[in-house]
Amino acid sequence: MNTKAIAINKQSWEEAAPRFYGRNPLPEYGPLAPTEDELQLLGEVEDKRVLDIGCGSGHSLKYIKNKLAGELWGLDLSHSQIEAARNLLSDDHVRLFESPMEKNPGIPEGYFDIAYSIYALGWTTDLHQTLANIYSYLRPGGIFVFSWEHPFYNRVYQKGEDLLLKQSYHKEGPYDHEAWTYPAIMQQFKVSTYLNALIKNGFMIEQVVEEVRLSEEDVERHTGRWYSFDKANYLPTTLIVKARKGKAVS
Ligand SMILES: C[S@@+](CC[C@H](N)C(=O)[O-])C[C@H]1O[C@@H](n2cnc3c(N)ncnc32)[C@H](O)[C@@H]1O
Image (cartoon, rainbow, N blue to C red):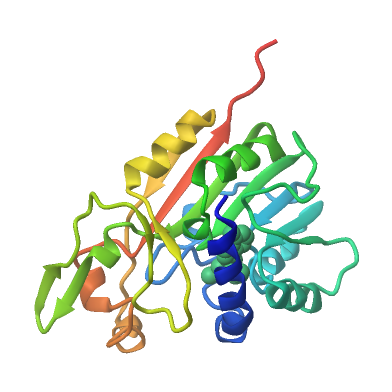
């Protein structure tokens, strides 16, 4: 875990939190991406123990709460985000941790039916450790679903009607995101790196989604923005993966 990068990102998120309040939470997996209502990746949530990694302002947890989950747990690096989630959920039974996802702040192991992470995993400074943690939190047969900006999306930029390849897709590692105002360090991983890291940590991959959903109302909403209608006509905005912890062999 890179403590220096985490400290920079924590500071950045304390400042950015109000700007991201309730932005693209579940049922959305990301801008211009298919939603949970359509994909049904989480399955039946009622009475399930659910954990949100990088829960932000808590709006995804609220969606899960409305589906009558049995237990709600969340983790986020930012104090402001955890406070926002606490206020939004106003429920003493929701357990929230202010912590980097790279370490376990006291989350029980072998416990959760469902873990998910919406647009947060690309912030981790240690993908393998983070996935090992998530694997350990799940019960055998439990599922993990994550979404993140598609790794090809920020490689390409739009100039007029042309789409130009700006950086090599092969290049991985820390980078400053072009659309980010405050100093912050995100991580670039290829699609195969995400999938292989899941496999190496013992997950079975059940579904990979790269589709976009473009409706007429999105033309206006997504013109001249980072997630642009034109670009999404050619490229996925969001990578969504569903994986499962293998059942214990007796
Ligand atoms: C785009 S927001 C997530 C939104 C949220 N998942 C939702 O559904 O509304 C990304 C979140 O990742 C958190 N984050 C960044 N780095 C992190 C880390 N290393 N560990 C845990 N959370 C982190 C940020 O504080 C921020 O709240």
